[in-house]
Length: 352
Image 1 (spheres, helix red, strand yellow):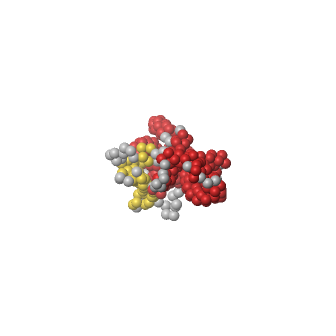
Image 2 (cartoon, helix red, strand yellow):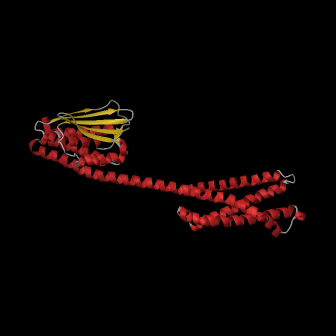
Image 3 (cartoon, helix red, strand yellow):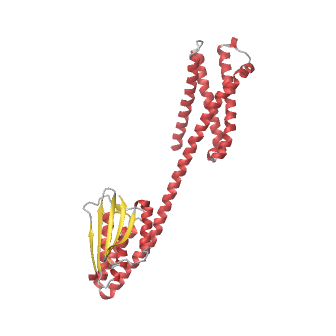
């Protein structure tokens, strides 16, 4: 289909271009008081046939010899002699056409062809060089631009493939990390709280189902991510019991708001591991989401303090930063700070 379309555009340009050139020459001849309509029509038709015939023959040779695959420097070396050769053929064909038409319509006024060509050949060659240089350069520039566009599309496609592979690699890192934490929770509950252990298994099976069937290389609705975070926090509360309290602030309208999978859950896991789990009395985790016209602000606060001098570059946060970069580039931001004396805040800024 694409080839047929390109073929049609090529012939449309050929007919339109050479017809305009022939019309220009016919107009110049019309200004002459000796203009003959039939002779002018013959000149017009033959001019179009000669122009299309030579350029189409050049195109056929270019395709046969693979010149469209050459780099710009190698192509330019071939264009100059090609234009000269085609221009010489053009001047010879036009001279033969002019002589033949005049021989048919005005045989008594003609000199020999050699005399005629000697008198007009150079002018015809210069005219042909100008015309054919424009045609040849336009033809190759069009295909060069098409090739560059195709290369750009291919590079973009490869970039997407590489991005998906990176996201898959990050997901492969993230899933075992999540599974380990969840199984560790159930391990603590089996002996002491069998009922809670069964509830934990139910919650974990739901989380695993979401994990297995959620594509990691695409975004997901914010409401689904918050639902999964709520299940995860309920699962962890079965282990921490009274040591863990949490609240989740959900905006009224989250329709159409998309976030990377596990982005909030990663922050919650980090808050549990480095905040609540290190305190004998436990603490509180709050998840707050604020929506504006241009961005989504996600805040996860937990009771605790940041250790001075620690880089806070564990697997979960490194993974999160990597996925944010792949999805948004420099448009997303992640900040971990000591918000108050006993409150640590992890803030995520995502464009809408």
